[in-house]
Image 1 (cartoon, rainbow, N blue to C red):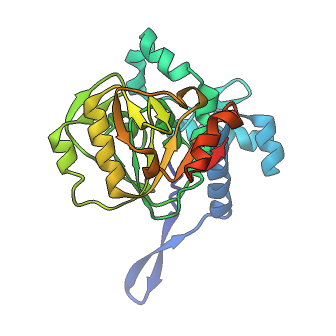
Image 2 (image 1 turned 180 degrees about the vertical axis):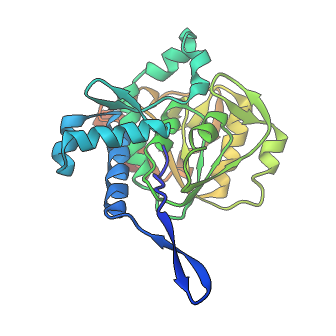
Length: 287
């Protein structure tokens, strides 16, 4: 979802014999822009919004809220529903919506993943260069990015790049490589070479398993190699995994536990599950 761009009217002002173009801001333009961005931020956090809720929260009439929602829908930033609006899935997901394995990945612990993504996104600073590995949980991180964050996103994931394509405040760098697996990841030597001279401030690491003895891991050798390369290039490393992945060991290691600084997981992760990571010196965030 993108930042709203409102075009100011242009008029002309005569100066001597020359005609000079002058921008005239419409009354309330800045206020409307703030409201539209607030609506998008609420939609990012909750996944849906209601007209009544927005009217109360913003202190404007339901007629005004409906007009705002219609404007945002025209820009392709949300989908209107009876009495409100929902976040709109990018069209490139449509062919996969009848694929049971795809749906199983997306729907499994979807609420937990959304909370993890929003909590992780809140850790990003304005102007940072961040990296995103493939996965359903990491996809939720980019959906929670704050507006006007002016960041650069480095990813080897085609769907991440597509989802961010409308964000004017986000610069996207895609590694290249060949398409692999069920979650739109790009892998191979071309992808790895593209990262060699890049400094990443923060990486968000998704994984099939995160065990304190084995580290973060996945079931693909190619993805493990590329994700591990991104981890090495990053100054701050944040694992984003739901509780079902904790203590799980997959075939291929992405990085050792000591490489991770912060673990963002959900509230179903028990104290017993997270204690080994806490003892390893990892900051724990349960969302």
